[in-house]
Length: 253
Ligand SMILES: O=C(O)CCC(=O)C(=O)O
Image (cartoon, rainbow, N blue to C red; front, side, top):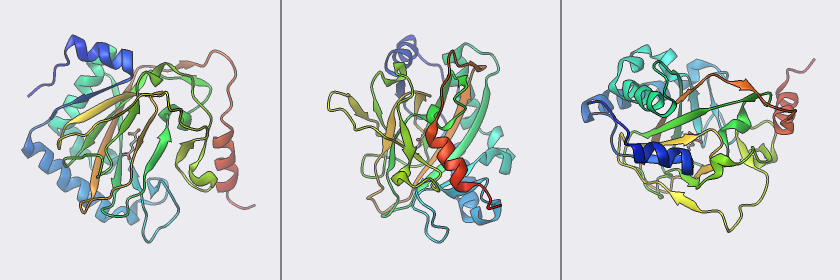
């Protein structure tokens, strides 16, 4: 099974900043990925705070949005799965790159108390001196609707600059970011429910969010990120929110 994007899907990604796809892997492959995913989250305490933390708060006991960075470095067999091969194909087709680079992370929204992932643009997390052309392929490992916390996107926000952000709850000790300006009623918000092993693909500037998990099943999502070579940002840009986080989290001297 090899994923081939249609011309319409490629055009929609560039025009609207995201696309939603059906399954990009087989049930057997997905089941193996889910098994590895669950093992990773069961042992997340061992990975240290550089690789595993609460994105939305600072609770070690009961994180409301636990995240693991680079799961395929921790479990290299993930790289051998059909899911990763097809994610790489999607990036390759959207960027016309034969061998695109790819990284990953994983976000779990626990059943019943998984926090919302606030509105944000991924680029707000990255180096302000650099311009990116990258994308995230967001794969739920079970069916996901609005009740479980599927992604929602603002159509055509991929064409915007990076908007002002702040740490979640305006607490600089928090890892996650949220938009620091109000949502405009004119923005066209599109929820993207998916079947297990389906995916959305969004650009690094596309505004997105995911509601809390109000259901009784954990929402497991694996996110593969791919991109083309970065270029220097044309101009000067500072991300004051990153500076506040760095200061708040610096070791006491
Ligand atoms: O999984 C989530 O709740 C958020 C994912 C996200 O923000 C992303 O993939 O860029």
